[in-house]
Length: 602
Image (cartoon, rainbow, N blue to C red):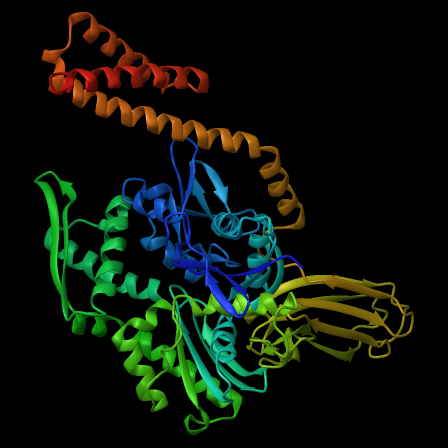
């Protein structure tokens, strides 16, 4: 079987790993980094940048640089979470036709799965270059508390990236797998996973190669991005008080504040205070305005204490759901970049009454676990069984708008449950099946996943027909629902297609466009790279010319200046042959300058 890679598609950073021969190989990107920023940028000349290169140009290209879109997976534009993102995002967010949140760049709309696909494609290309072979199979992780909409959106992102997503695995479970495979011990562990955008806490029992999740809890909108936002809000409000300028309206200032807040947060994990200095942050009629502030670790902790406290509430809920106490926990595993923050580490240590385990790399453990799961599926790792759970209850809407649960939360998956229902009206010819996910008693307060109809029910008084409804969740946590009239044996079955996210037609269209424009996209990248080379040579040639013009003859000067002008004009065209020819001519001129400069030394 081909190699199966494991991918942690993170809010802030992503990681790809291959587990081979009992060793986890963290695959570096083209720049040698073991993690890749989950950032995508679109330049004015039509080029798409991803990872570190996108992050470096974010300030100069703020409105067209997109980040943290994982937090928008499966969410509607009008949701409070997306509205909160919009407040501090320099890029534009809008509503799709189905109400989903999408980002708008250069007038084109991109769904969160599409942005995620660009990151996944970058990781896939890194893996192919590293392994020197094609890669198609992958295991991708998601937060344990992702609902069905969000899981399907993640699967769509993998498919758009050209990956066969063999399994969707929960992030805390993956981290436990990475921890457990390297040890022969057994027991009950708590996995505390606080990343850039999401938080999960899972209680797992493992022994003899069997990993069973007993309970999971969390928040898909709680993470490092919220800590950054708290600090950004404090800086913006302080700046407004001093200058009466609202930085929320300035995309470039927002991006600079975002970078500075993230950097200060990281620095305060190892030092007690740091300085935030942003010269020329903005300007008004009185001139340029600068921001300078000394921030202490204590101040940051005061700003964010309630966010960390929320994670501890979830920890207690998970213990209660698993029917265990702190005394039953044999180890506490911390993963996710935010667990490096002293406030977080100390809060977890105090709650569980023990020092958390730091033997696994918090930035890589999830991807390592995904890679191990990939190796299990490929048959390279044996005697390991992974039993995960359904994070949220699933059911249908029944008479009176009530949410009737068929599969409670924290049930081990895969699972299939069947219940029998009846009609609520006399001579009812069909039954509407409204599939929902959540924990609230009323259907309207939960997440709608799908609607379908079972038709052809014979005329009968209400309560007489018997309708059998079956819910089946696969190992990926993705739902399939069927309804059957026991009298007529008529059956309607659907693989639940999220009410949010991309339709099958949209996915096929995007894949077709990607294939159709593969050559054009490659040409655009090559053209942009060629233009950059010419621009760089123009710059260095002009500098050299200024320093050595006294040593050149008039005819040489005229030729070099003519070549410079031709090169400048050529970069404005899309004719690659023309650009390449002018590049060769300009290279000859540059070499001529070098020869003249060193002539007296030969």
